[in-house]
Image (cartoon, rainbow, N blue to C red):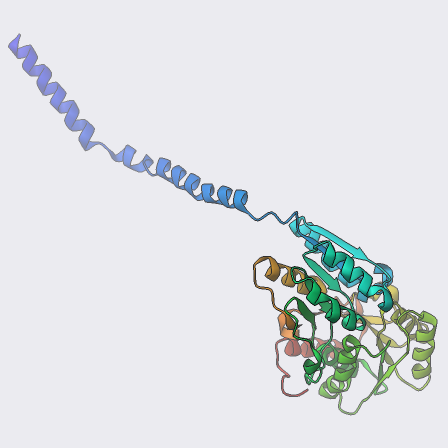
Length: 360
């Protein structure tokens, strides 16, 4: 009996020794479970973060527009900007069209009294109204879509109001002028403004400098049409220059500028679209469009607001800060002489990388 017990003890010790000396499979498999636990630990904060993410649904923004969103230009790009903000953040995003200068004060008071978080006043023609009324509603952030002359000479005119930002891209006129200087075959290009507002005057002030960068021999003419809405008047103005041998046309005149594009297409000369991609308006004339990137700009302003980093005063987006976009070629890179396409691509790349700073 003692022998049996002794053998049982030996057997048990042997089995115990085997269990301690054979962990290889367990050692190989062991990381599998901790790894799964680590994955769960990694996912848990993500779920918590999603749960704790700020709720933007109660925020309200509105865009007050001087024209209609179907203008394929100035008013459309602001409408598109707030639409994208609303879709991304789930907040209330509204717009009002066709507001006259004389009526803007009423709208500003209405949305200020209602406690809207951000009010976009889309046009420098409303500057007087917004600078007068914004201080009455310190909890509402007002954005005035603006333009800044390249030399900064308009900066002194900006009012120092803590809840008002003057917002817009800069340098677009140089981009337009440079492209026009390469496109022209007659060395005569024209840029037509609607009326002299800061947003348009800024573009006008850069055209000649841009043309000089790419074609110093070319004549760069700028003029004002006198309207932001009359397309027939704009068409006549463009035709008058085309009749004098101008073979590249561009305009900043809200919905009126469409008349300039149609005139260029009818005459068989080049045109550049402006504000939005206007290729479809006159596909046989619009080679490229130079666009104010208000979708990015106002998304960025809104995100700064909700992050507590609101900035008042001049909020300008330069060419190397995504303030401006250039459209797709829409096949024109296959129709133009290859050297022009190459020259334009190289110019845009260098300009948007800050390569010409100090030269305009």
